[in-house]
Image (cartoon, rainbow, N blue to C red):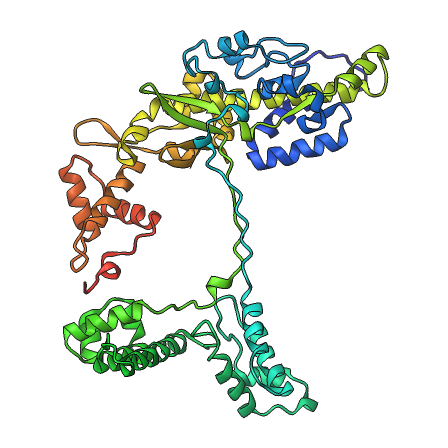
Length: 505
């Protein structure tokens, strides 16, 4: 056979750059969207934020849709909620009413999904930035060290110990390991390190510098006992009797594992003492802190900006786009007019990219609001009565109702949050598997977890109910659930088993 050239016509699907951008904007979170918009603002001269265009602030006050400058109807998914075509200017009042014409948002101006944040009531501003400067544990201990009358050598040794503590305040390295880490010419003796460690363990917070949990709790118990004795010497009544102190000390030093396992019969046999004394010692140990340095750990605060806000207005649940989550960007009209006068310039491509971005952002929030409306419509019972009224729901049901692909629903519900009177929830929270009931109906997994949580919360702490008992109770209510399913849901709720929930009180 000889090689030959041949013409062939065929059709195939391809992801255009605009479609790729639309998919990416749909699946990222609100925080990632803001970062993406910032990148486009830095790279594309035709885009500007509202802060950079104060002369157009009056137009922007009409809502985030006003920042488009050249917004057009959304194409593709979400066509049922398309915005009116608007080449220039902001949304007018009658067009915002047309947006709410389906009855979803009502006629209140603030219920528009693109309402300006300036129209919100004062009681709607639930998000405040609180800056708290937490002192690190090493800084706190070094400050106390500076107040102590010590020699330079002792001060250096204590500083070495301070730097060797972990976030909970424990000394993870042994004194022998620390001695080997120091240069030989320093000539540190083990007695010196032990003396420095003794001084460190007298600092605040009590229990700092311990090498294990037993030592940490013993230090706190000894300090608490000294305070009790001092209070008794001043004429105040002693709160804890001496044999209770001794019993708590024995439990901490030798029987802490039995206490953690809540094996009280074995603990009573090993540690001695009557039930009343054991109960008092148990309460005393529970009042101690096994993580004394945790209060000085630097915690990273993670803030969630909900994409939609759900409120009950005139007896109906309404959904609105959170103005704080909507990026306020627009096309620079001056640059756009200059580019229009010089058609075919190299900047025409960037202008088209800017228009694509604004349309894709609008389409993103159109899809989010449609999915949120459908979720709220189906989960009204949860909003009214809580988790026990959560209906079983799968993504395919939402996709079929909205005529969207199931993968689109998956992208919309990932890292998107809904603010409700019952708290802020990710969209995926409202989806749960169907579990058939004995009456032929269906119950969601979320509702079953809520029932398990209620049953355990109301149990007798001295005789906690087992997973088998929970299974029986749910079966009597018409919800046949296997014991392993109850155990799985209980673990998902971070609830320990019955033997670890047992208490003396």
